[in-house]
Length: 125
Image (tube, rainbow, N blue to C red; front, side, top):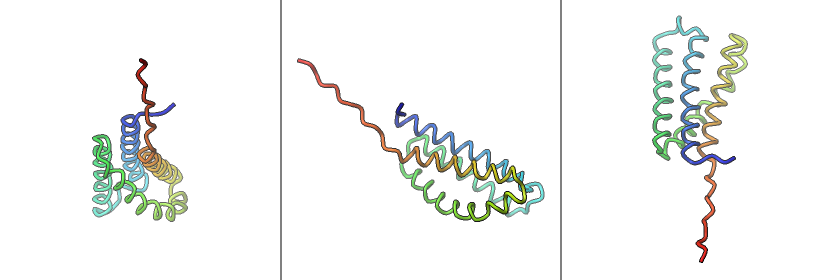
């Protein structure tokens, strides 16, 4: 089964939106109620970026996948380094952090998968 280009874009956009919702859950599991204003503001900005990226990807902007790639490169390393501490502090938050990263990586893979070309039907004479 191969996916059309539009369905890959729609699935990737949906995966990014789900990761944004999970990011909000992650924030609350890590003590979001007692977090400082700066942390709350950074979380709102990250959610806004994810949702805007999902919108631009769904609309077909090719540069959005490159921006997602750059953001993932910048954020995956600190996530991986902090993962043991996150699991120690809150097991569920650690699981959600892993799911968020997997959803975003999966969306990126879908966006960079080459489209399978349709075979051209030859006219019978």
